[in-house]
Image 1 (tube, rainbow over the protein chains, first blue to last red):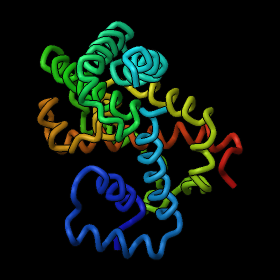
Image 2: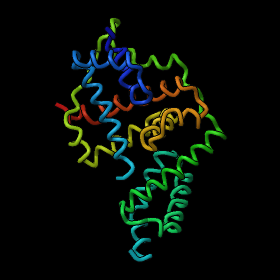
Image 3: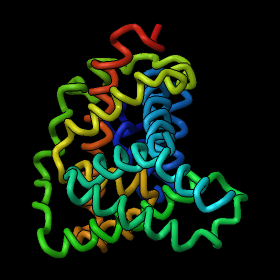
Image 4: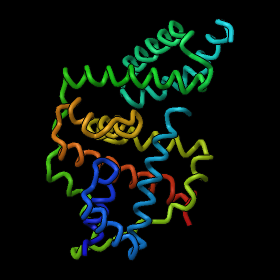
Length: 57
Length: 190
């Protein structure tokens, strides 16, 4: 199983490249069991959403 | 909308355009030029503005293109230094040697609450400005101009893996900055 350190990296890279099927499965499985990484993923989605709202303000 | 109304409306959104352009280009003069070009293009293309979308949205999309043109030109003239592979290690301290979080991510609560507060975007601006230019340029192309990663790498003549490293570092730094300057101040967090 992948560590949090590996998963946080994949969570970020998933915003910038298409993850392989194996990578996606590994991330999903890890996130199911790890609240800390789920929070991290939410933070990254938050950041993206915030940036999208920036220009029109 | 009459021409005068149209012009008045453009004037009204000018400060927003300037703020956006300065953030992207990090230089008042280039920002000023990009905004001028944009306003001119908007005036000339007034018939093409159907009124279906908001004027601001339409003008911002013109500005985006003007900014991309400038970034393109700039990266041809002065390529940014490559991010070294070792620099990706900056964030090792967040993890235990066994790969678990040493410093668990905080709960940022309901993001919508932050978006309602104008102050939040000031903090975000501040955090963006604190990024080294090579990181912010790539990150802004990705997130604000919404370009595909491959497109950005091509424009900036970077390898894909270098692009990912740069984007990784930008995201991690912004996360750290928002945590410190916004969420740790008791806004939105538990």
